[in-house]
Image (cartoon, rainbow, N blue to C red):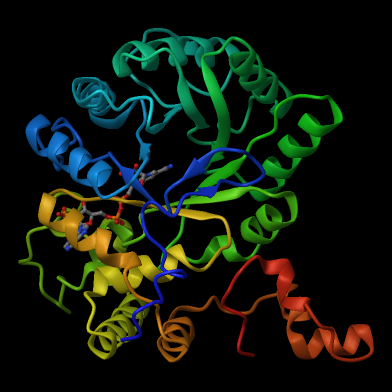
Length: 368
Ligand SMILES: NC(=O)c1ccc[n+]([C@@H]2O[C@H](COP(=O)([O-])OP(=O)(O)OC[C@H]3O[C@@H](n4cnc5c(N)ncnc54)[C@H](OP(=O)(O)O)[C@@H]3O)[C@@H](O)[C@H]2O)c1
């Protein structure tokens, strides 16, 4: 295992500016979808507060929640814990709106301005704070015009209710439209995307990450352990392990039922053995170091899981292990992306081109 030199070492308090913004955040963000028990797989208030304090004491400053998590209980727990500890100002609180959070009426869903304005006030009340640092549109609703969404976020910034905003679970073209519309109209632009990204889900490498890199958007990646599949605790054919994937949702999104998942998990276990780290730490380290402006949103149901996951930044993943993981988990090359390989780029450009890999925004360059 290569221990990183002190000056190069990435740590929770190695804050970086998220996207093209002045907002400084930790490279690991604390996900709180597991705070509160109404989901059936979350934890109680005492356990949630303990995790929040452990994360803050380790230097973490970035907390991700949503109005829908545990039907609002996640936001309430965060508000009470931060205010009781007197650390609200030090923290960057991110929350989201889009989905049904219990409000009444057909306009209590989606990304229309009426729902956005209602949702932020409800979140501020539950979080017991005057402003949200980073407000996310939780998901594209497929109907609200992008102009209405950008204007709404800009109005919330001007009203002092939020400081920045970002887009979660959107198509890449939608994010680009939002950035360009904001720039052309002197409005605040989104600073980051929130998307699923892990060794078992790399689809965003095709469109979202090149777009994010080009337009200066940060990345906050969710489900970096694919709901626990990359923790190493699940074994082939073993349904007896206690965990969200087997006990609640069934094999979530079928991830444990796919042969390709086990190819990736086997490579991960080998990389963990080789580096002397836990599989979860290796998977999180990989996710945290793939894209240049990334904060990985870690999830935990128990304090021991959180502590293990916070160790993910304490080592540098050797290139040989990064290659092993990449080869097991890379996306199939489909049209038109086969045109953008180094060999093809050399053909279209009349010879090898320096810096061609820069457009992907990724550290891991394709091997073929
Ligand atoms: N924008 C979106 O649409 C969206 C969607 C999903 C999540 N998110 C955000 O992303 C955060 C993280 O998502 P996630 O919870 O799905 O992340 P994840 O890291 O993929 O899964 C976390 C789960 O894996 C298991 N686990 C974690 N560390 C472990 C360890 N060291 N050993 C064994 N098991 C371990 C735990 O579940 P068990 O104990 O049950 O096994 C834990 O709750 C959420 O809290 C939320 O803030 C956003």
